[in-house]
Image (tube, rainbow, N blue to C red; front, side):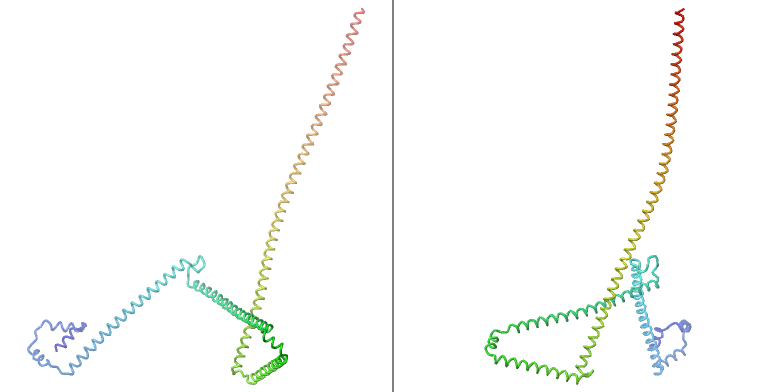
Length: 350
């Protein structure tokens, strides 16, 4: 009973507070004490039920605590993720603030940013394709270079062999020169060996042709070689077409630049001609003004000349009138003197 009371006190959630408050303040009767003495050792079934209920409550509390701890851990993880997301958001904001990929004068909206990112991705894909094409060209050029180097090595080896064949050892030359029969026999055996090797090669080719299937080793090798040759031919054709396109593009660019240069020269010439026309018009206006001024000056000069002529004529007339008046006066004086002289002579005669 005491054990049961202990669990009831520990795991009381406030459901029976009213009933406990009723029994705490009053005295118990002797009947209750007798009943309590009788139930000191309750039945095993009731004890087991109480223990099971207590275990279940303990398990529930532990589960609740574990769920609370798990929830706290989840909340902490979510807070960390939120902090990381906020940090990423702040970093993106700083990035857009410092070095923006969107056009100037616009805010970094999601649609604009996505369009800019798609544009960057498209340019990146184009650059990747160009890089892949360049790598393919480089690989083809390396293969060609390796083939040319191998041909050079083979030709050098062949040249060395030919040099050695042209310069045989001295002792062998002496033996061949000393024994013509051995030389003839050696030549005949060499020819027979060459014929036999040629026959063996022809037979091997015939055998390979008879045994040729797409699934055989030789067939697979030949098919792989054919595919390689086909790819090389396609690559060579593509390079040739690209080379022609590049050449045509270069010529077109040169023609465009030449047309632009001619257009610019024509524009400059047209502007120069317009300037000359303007200068010519200004010169003609100046000439007209000068001619008009010259005519006015000539008319003024002519007027002045006429005025001078009139003044000269007047002066001449005045001089002539003055001279005639003086002559008349002199004549009058002479006549007067003559008369006076004649009157004096008459008076003297008287």
